Image (spheres, rainbow, N blue to C red):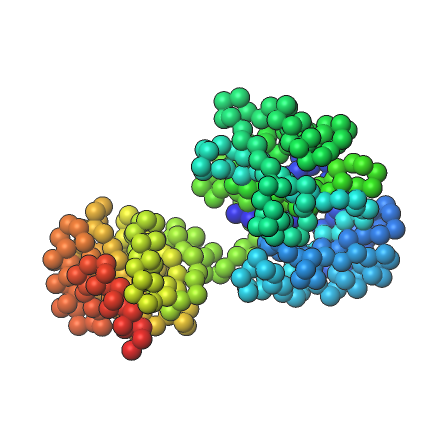
Length: 387
């Protein structure tokens, strides 16, 4: 689950990480009222969407008067914004964050994530932060510093100090960085997070470090342990179909192709998409219906797939292990009838009672094509989509 910047900063503050004062606003008048509560003569108005790159897209504005605050907030609220991180999708701007303006001397980058290669929680840092950190990583990888945290010992103060000196910080700044890193490590573990990103972690002209922007992703599998995080979810920032799928315990991801995929098991689903691509097709989605492919789940899956008008054919690839293939076939037939599927459907079944399942499909009288194996199914569905 993703979080807005203002929510991330609230979590930072809860763990003793100092952030500049900021107030969220949902109208232009609220934005002005917020600015009046923040001392200083300049403010930053920031669009709140679940994506980075807002500055380049016009979603971060420096205001030097209350009139400017109102103008910028009014121009953002109620509109939609796409950045280089949204893959062309425009996200709604329902709120803005009004922050105190700061004088920045330099920008750094700091993140925390789980490194699967080393099987550790890892800090990644760079003295060259800001909006172009991806370009720095590509052109100057030696500038990227990493700290792997031993899962028994936990993050040690000396590791924080060493990273600070590697980044060229002075003694005072190293102490501030250590406090930030220890707070982030505790936050990361206690809230079951998947990613924390500070970009920029700024050095102000007075020499202090300041967290000017923050991004947090949590582990969806641990949401049941954190109702306080679940309450922060903003479904308007998410794909509507994926939200609906989650309500039916279906794992669904929207893609750009025209061949709908319905598979049980994440590994088989990924292999199915690969085989479709190898045969010249393009998957329209990733959809894992899970081990219990019942009629109800299959019906909801068909509805999700067909919610996209780009789908020209559907490939159902099911392994009958927990549920017998004949029962799966009955569920597919019933679902196709109930949903009134108009596009070609290719079904590959394998497992217990597979021949009974195929016979049911053949005798159904519906436009369902049985496939012998995954490659045969991929070839047939690609041909059907092109027809």
